[in-house]
Length: 211
Image (cartoon, rainbow, N blue to C red):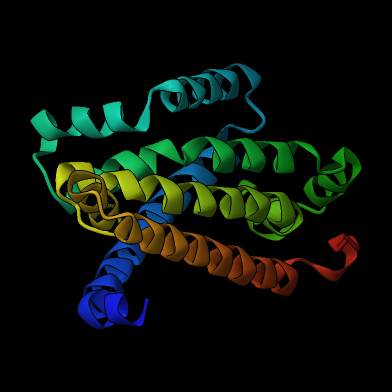
């Protein structure tokens, strides 16, 4: 094991950083798209159903197929991989955002409206804070998804720990596959832990539920 790390340690750290970078950018883009869209369409049942169905259908397409479809559109490398991964993780965040907004007590919304709050104020002061726990739950789930799926981004030349996996398969070196699997698992656990702390920090006290 020590010999393996001496030979491949630096490359493993580089690939881990590439993997983290691809996953983080994809997650941020997914959040910036899914949360505002979910907030806007939450109270429009037909439109929300159509958007969720579209996102759900996208997730039924195999990840490799989505990545392959990016090649004729955007070529190879990190950009098409990030685009594909961002689209792939929309469903959990969209779904939880919509559910979070819909679960807000109508009496609270009516009281806020009677105080003269505008649509923007309602979203900023009522909907966002009260739907935060469910939104962050969707983001945590998506973070684990995107870190695992980013392994396949190597298929279109995006780099990351998938390079170790594919090289290990091609050269019959199981230690490359095992080391990559361990690092992917570590990244997923760290991301989930950090987001769980963020969830506790930003969730209003009255909405925190003991687990």
